[in-house]
Length: 120
Image 1 (tube, rainbow, N blue to C red):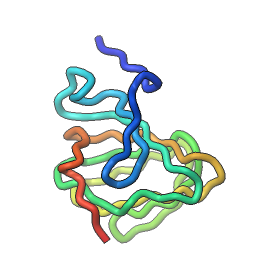
Image 2: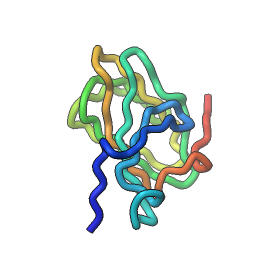
Image 3: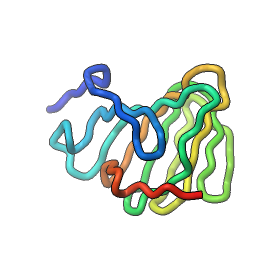
Image 4: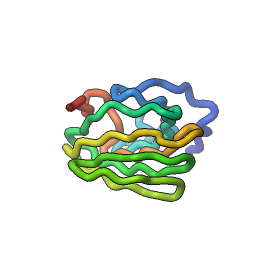
């Protein structure tokens, strides 16, 4: 069994501009095929629109309100919402609330900058 506490993981900024803490990933556990991270976006800020070549992704909103674009669809999301993002689907998330937007990011295969393509 492996247990990693997110408060003991050094945060970093991903290629899309998210502030991330990888909770479980190949770099800090025995996992090979997936990763789990906590992301945060400050009020009024957004990620850079991007897509992943191989990874499918799940966003699960823990705190805050956001607007998200996946492909050509734009929706509002908030605490308790899960969003499925398939490989090669362009996506971007905006914090439209007054507190930090905090969400879990699950990737399979695991997150890699090399798999992330910034798009317009």
